[in-house]
Image 1 (cartoon, rainbow, N blue to C red):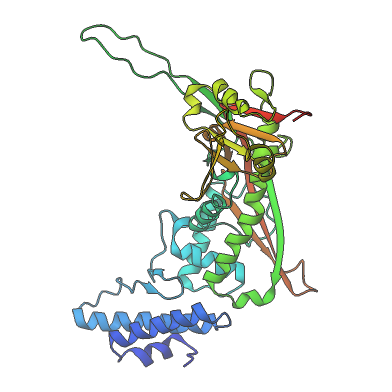
Image 2 (image 1 turned 180 degrees about the vertical axis):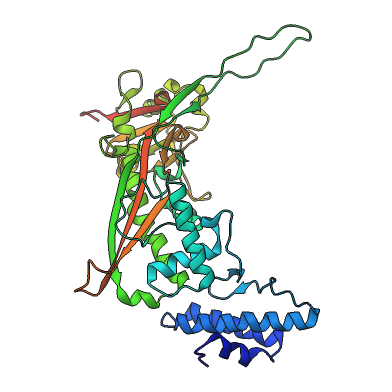
Length: 409
């Protein structure tokens, strides 16, 4: 049954039981999850009527005429939803902002609470200058909801490569931040004797701000998509474009208009570089050079071709393979006890040994998503522009050792 107004829906459900209302809410949620062509506007009207009818029944049961306590269920988002109040704290983390954000991107109608939440978020965004770093051209640009951003980053860490092993920062650009380096261990103390203080050793890192931009188009029919389906699509798209750009910069970034990678950001010389001659002693020598403080969490990084062409068949003097596959823990395997990380951004015949907690990327502003329905007017498409301010950089040069195959190897 379709209702034209909230009042019609309320009158229909006000004399039903709470069980019937909850049952209808579950049916609506199933419709949204399974029918991408569902009329979201009509469904929202019915949900509003259900909320008011449920509240009316509860007020009668409790004998309470206070109308400030509202229903807390919303089948659209599957999360708690306060019908009257706009969140005042952590607004970008709220379910209301998340729902309003995706409805705005889809061109769907927002209800009153979603409208006020979105407007308040935009005011907060301007007050915090979160949008100043982005070159936006329309008023349909908004910072990605915190939950979605976290899912994008989480998914990026499962796509393989170094991005799942380096540090993720969220600090302002062009500010020098101290990073601690390994220090000496504590010492046994003789009672009553003075102890000399030790100054902590730190190194400073300063991230710049470089733009990452990706424009992609989808059919205008996406307006009929549910919030959940559209969010899932956005997570995949943002992971594939923005996070892959960061992953590539972690290795090969030049530092000019983009992040700085391991290959160009570290001065490689005889103190931290070895030849990959095809003997297992290459790896034992590399581990010997790496300082003990970094070696505890060190890993070998290389591309897939290097693993199988240069490492897979190596054995020691007792004919024991130095590479041991590790299917039990769902990792690639280990070389001399150190985990192997496969990253196809690394050049062939190159292996980097290091503690990748001393390599990092920074995204101070999160992600901005902007929608335009004018640029593809003739084709009937809707354009979306994803933008991020980011940088990548080695934090401590001495945490890495490079092995490169010689011409004879």
